[in-house]
Amino acid sequence: MSEGRNRRWVLRARPRGEVTPDDLELIDLPVPSPGPGQVLVRNVYLTVDPANRIWMSDMDSYVAPVEVGEPMRGRTWGTVIESHHPGFRPGDVVTGGLAWEEYSVLDEPQAIPMELGLPLEAFTAPLGPTGMTAYWGLLDIGDPRPGETLVVSAAAGATGSVAGQIGKIRGCRVVGVAGGPEKCRFVTEELGFDACVDHRVGNVAEQLREACPDGIDVDFENVGGEVMDAVLGLVNHHARVVLCGMISTYNATGDWWSPRLFRNILFRRVRVQGLIVSDYLPRFGEALPVLANWVRQGRITYRTDVVDGIENAPHALRRIFEGRNIGKQLVRVSPG
Ligand code: NAP
Image (cartoon, rainbow, N blue to C red):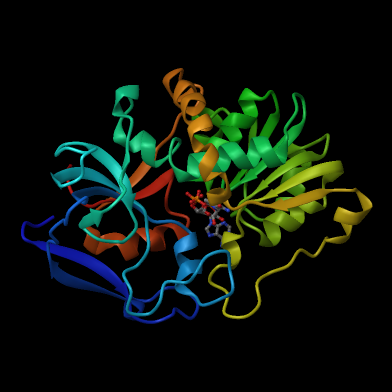
């Protein structure tokens, strides 16, 4: 949060296992000047996400890795402070920045529809990429029907919290999996899930069996590992698995985890489909008014978990992998 300089995180090395302080470097640059057709944005929020860890590695994934020496990739929201773009004026709130930095020069910012009357935080969370992931993953891939049982892992997090609430709106019995009693209270008491299994207590399979007496029809999978194996043990015939993420394995140094109970996908005719939210970019505009209405009506509630200062971005990312965040983990880059 400084005038005259732009602090930016650069990838210095590909992490082996967990991200260490040697893997990223905070560098100081002058605040850039926008050219013709460009805007200068003072970033307010940076999102840190589990996928950041995937982008730091050079595995063959769904997107090009961040190259060593390049700025660390991550979406920002902020305020235009200088504009040479005919469509934007100073004071406009936009997104489009894709680096861990305090200021961004953008060619094609996207205006945030503040006229919807919701705070900027809402556009980073239930109306942002993770909300879109929950919406399209659950409704387009999961196809939940009233009375079915939906299980959502990482239920207190940004994506899971929204997926489960949409499941409730769709009339499902919704069971969350989360780490610790505080998160489980949040999931049942604030988000309105029917039950929550605490994976830190152990024996997830047994706890899930009790919470899902009619088996599992839809799995919104964010975690993989032991949690997903427990779900696969309980899936009903023709269940759907929305494979959204496998965070329990992103820090693996060898091969990623694979399910032990893969056979149940065959025996029970389960449909498993991977989800990459950017495939739905052309349809974000369809989901936005629906999600905004649900937020306004209080049918979707959300929390943001904010760490201050661009210098603390790696710390914010670590919080996600330590399970310390409740709701959307953000970095407040400037007061706005
Ligand atoms: P989040 O849920 O807000 O935060 C991640 C949570 O994962 C942590 O709070 C922690 O919750 C849990 N976790 C972390 N390490 C774990 C481990 N080793 N074992 C079990 N649980 C662990 O993050 P998010 O951004 O919403 O992402 C959730 C998942 O969705 C991730 O897998 C992410 O990659 C995926 N995602 C995918 C897409 C896509 O397009 N495919 C888009 C967005 C997100 P607990 O304390 O409750 O365990």
